Amino acid sequence: MWFFKAPEIVYGEDALSYLSQLQGQRAFIVTDAVLAKLGYPEMVIAQLKEAGIPAAVFSDVEPEPSLQTVRKGAAAMLEFEPDWIIGLGGGSAMDAAKAMWILYEYPDIEPAAINPIVPIGLRSKARLIAIPTTSGTGSEATWATVLTDVEERRKLGLASREILPDLAIVDPALTANLPPRVTADTGIDVLTHAIEAYTSSWHNDFSDGLALKAIQLVFSYLPTAVSQGARDMEARERMHNAATIAGMAFGNAQAGLAHSLGHTLGASFHIPHGRSVGMYLPYTIEYCVRGQDPTRYADIARFLSLPAADEAQSAASLAAAIRDLERRLGLPLSAAEMGIEPAQYDDEISRMVLLVQDDTSVTMSARVPNRADTAKLLRYTFDGTPIDF
Image (cartoon, rainbow, N blue to C red):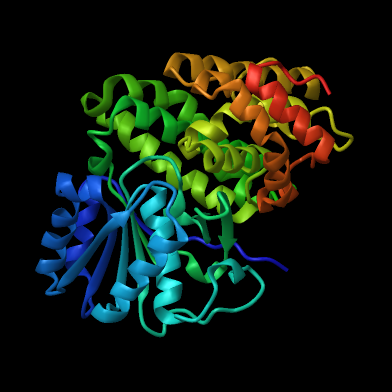
C-alpha cells in the first residue's frame, strides 16, 4: 500500500489574488532577503490584508537553507503564533518553511529525525501555503525538504507526507523577471525531477503521466523562457506549470542518482542545486542504462521523437538531447566548467563518495552504484568524460 499526495493548486494568471479569500488569524511569511528587497512579501501582505489577516515576515533564508536558520525562524514563529505559514520564494524558502513549521509545532524534535515512517502530528497549530517564485524545485508539491548542515558540510534530504503544503499558488507573474541564468538553472532542475521520477524504482501509474508531460514542457518552453523572459509569458506560465507537475511526479516517485550526486557537489562547492543535478543528469542516464535491470529511457525518447530502436540507443539519444539543451542554455557540462579547481576536487573525492552513498535519493536510482563506481562517476564528470562502465 502506498499513497499519492498532492496539494490543492491554484494556478494561472492572477492566482496570487486567491489569498484575499483566505480565512485565518495570522500568517507568517518565510522568504529571502532578495525577494524582500524586491517587494514580493508586500504583494502577499496586500492580498492577506484584503482577507483581514495580519502577517509577519522572516526574510533570513539563505540559498541551501541551514539548520541554524530553520531554528531561528521557528523561534520567531513561536513568538508570533501564526495559523498560516507561507513559504514564498524558490526551493530554499519553501523547504525552510516546511522545516520551521515542524519545529514550530514540535520545538524539541530533531530535524534529522524527520522520516516518512514515523508520524509527526502536524496541523494542530498551523497549515502551510507554498508560493514558488522560480520554476524549478517543485517544493510546492512535494513532501520533502532539503536542509544544509553547515558544520558537517552536507545536505539532509528529509521527508514526511505531513509536510506537503496544503495549498500551492502557482502564479507565472511571480517569475516574469527572473534572470536568464536562474531560469536556466531552475528549469533544468525540472527536467531532472521528471526524468528521474519516470525512471525511479518507485515510479507508478499516477506519477508517470505527470513526468512525461513535464519533460515535454521543458524541451518545448525552457529555451524560450530563458531567452525571452517576460516578453513571452506563455513560456513562463508553461515552465511554472511544468515545475509543479514535475514536483508532483518526483514527490510521489522520488528522485535518483543525479540528485544524490548534485546534493553532494552543491554542499561541497556551493553550486546552485539545479545546475548541479542538471549537469549530472546525462551522465547518470549513461550509467544506469548499463545496469542489469531494464530502464525506461526508450519511453522518454519515443515521447520526444528521438532515436529509440532499443534501450541503449534511447539512453544515448536522450543524453545527447539533454547536453544539447544545456549547451543552448549556457549551462556547464562538467564540474570543471563550474570553475572548481582540480586539486580541490581531488581532495574532496573520498568524502563526496560517502555523502553520495548516504543520500536517500540514490536508493531509488535505476542503478545503484557501489563506492568504486561512485568515485569513478565523480572523476568522469569532473572532466566531462562520457560514462562507459
